[in-house]
Length: 125
Image (cartoon, helix red, strand yellow):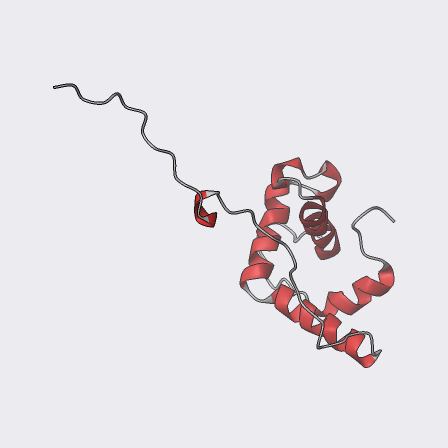
């Protein structure tokens, strides 16, 4: 198994949640597991989408799956299903659980530092 990829057991929990392709025309759909592995690779590695390894297919296709699943609530349903699975096993302390612990650095001016001033020469009379 490669880095950032799901085991068969993990995939069995997620597979039923992913939307099924119903289109009968156009290109055949990509393997959703492969697309999810590409999504996880980008999100976990922090690399830009364009740096996605070729083994996952075209970066634009993987990004399109990510965007569609994000917009249609698929990731929310996956999170909910995984929470229920872990809760049944007694592995979630709901008093301590949180989804995001990341931080974003603000500019110095946002923290109260003085903003850059113009260094224009003073006008002479």
